[in-house]
Amino acid sequence: MKEENAYDYQQSQQPVEKDKVKVSYKLVVAFAVIIIIVVIAVYFLLSRSTASAVNPGSVAAGAVKAGDTVKVMYVGYFQNGTVFDTNYEDVAQKNGIERASFEPLEFSVGQGEVIDGFDNAVRGMKVGEKKTFTLKPADAYGEYDETKVESVPRIGLTNRTTEIETVFDVPKYLFAQVFGKEPSVNEIVNSTTESISYKVLNTTTANVTLEMQVKKGQIISSQSSPWNSTVVDISGKKAKIRQDPQNGTILPNSIGYSVITIEGDKIASTLNAIVGTQFQTQFGFGMVKEVTENEVIIDTNPPLAGKTLVFDVELVSIA
Image 1 (cartoon, rainbow, N blue to C red):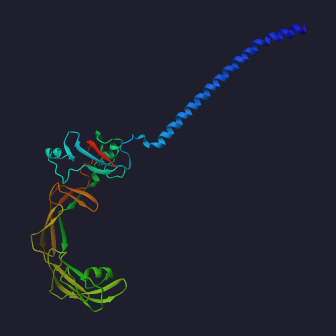
Image 2: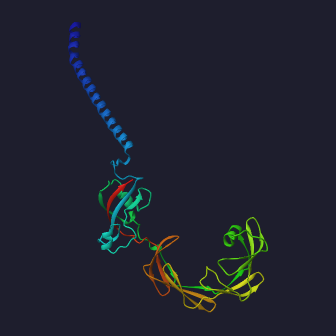
């Protein structure tokens, strides 16, 4: 009974042991396949990382990248086909565009020397390649900003007579620039730019004290003024100076001209601006947009602000 049971037990266990072997074998194979997949994946990732480190940005050899200095020929036009700029001489002549030179445009990529969209568009190009691209305002000269449109009065009034101090201090370095010498107390010095003499009253390491040598009725001329002035009164250390422009004097300026007239004790300057005139100031670009009876409307937006631009570009060289 025990042997039979033992035999039966042994026989009953054999299929189980075979199943275990089969299961174990399958697990080993599956595990090996997983390891192979992991190894391949790691190798692939490492290969890509190495390639990226060697060639950042995946820029093809010989193609434009940040830091390159490039030369390009181009035609810029609006979506309706109107050409607004080009450095091709024949295209310029055909479209009535005047410019001093028709040399290739040269700039350093990534240095902000041209508008962002143009800078980005040439990246990846190769010498001799031609490309057409369209730039929305955000990638070109920005959206049109109404707050950059300002008005200035056409007529300005200033007092004809002003009171000035006849004794004053000037920096020592400025004295040397104006008079071309070092100061000496009690010396009378003459300016080369105006018809006034000055007496040196005192000098320190930093400043020079001067006294204007003027008298009532004296005519004063200055290179910085388009007309003469007259000393009309002197009281203590003060003098009254009257400006004496001629009625109808015309003064040219960057946006047209001004006409000077005398109105009682005031000098009136009437600005006559020319619509469309462009000018540069210390704050940037400006253009006369409109002239009314009392105001001149100035637009300081870039001329191409709010415009969608199209460019045909040919890459000439990479340095």
